Image (tube, rainbow, N blue to C red; front, top):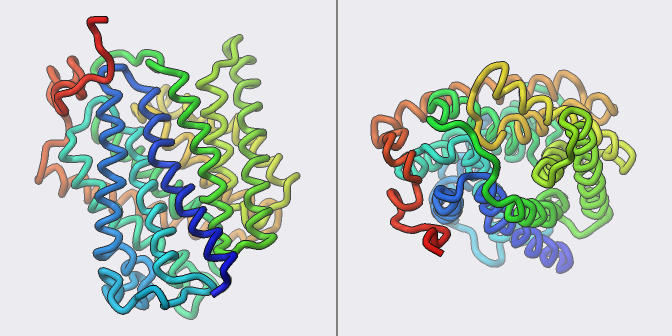
Length: 393
């Protein structure tokens, strides 16, 4: 084992968990009505806890076990046979388990943004559990675990898909699942209102930005120049997308908003994720600059053209951003077109089909949507017995 590698991945693991708790929770929480903010925090926190246990039980084994082209099997369930001295590359395997666990946490947590303010709490728990095990973990195995799309002897493509930190594995899967679930769930009954706390949104986005250094830089799995470059290009893309988002927003609406700027930040981060192990700073600048405009346009397409209430724009920002980064690897000559587009197609079809099946199964177990009265009064008080703010003061 290399001590520096181990130390860096320990830090990166903490940074990626920081992205979900509290980063994503605050980012999403600030975007909803004040009567639903605690429900969003509850969803993110509950998913973090539940995915951790399921990743230990079978998720890690499905994704990174020594199975076949389609899944890793159950040979590493509950980390059987793995102790503090077991090595994965240059780091302890238990640390690799923990690092990948934080990815398994944030991916279903990203989907929360599509269904806030109207979903049943029980549905969130059951759906997230099944989706992580049956959709996310197999895709992680296909691309990162030596499976169907990894370029191994049984791969569909000779060279494998280039997805450094999760443009397909994390962002495409979460984005498409969010779109499907939002379409099945239906729109909110009340007209959308502005975010109740833009300051909270900015704080959450800033935490996501910092945490993303661990997300992308940690995916190098070493403390070396590759990790440093991944961290650098991540920052450049985020900065560029933040600026182009507000410039385009100013052109379209006459004002540049704080919420718009930090949403652009997330678009730039999602877009650079798959490319952060390959591109240089100038290429990252181009990716981020385009992403800030592209993802903003796609927000309008989803809500106004195809009329799906993906409430917090999960598909337009994460799904489109992640897929855009995959495509830009082809544009810059860092990956083959067949591998990248083939990977997008295979995972896209699988995600849509599997998500639809999981929604159907989960709907049999627990109600999908809260009733009209609960939605009107707010999920915080009715579902969780608490309020975020003292309404009498």
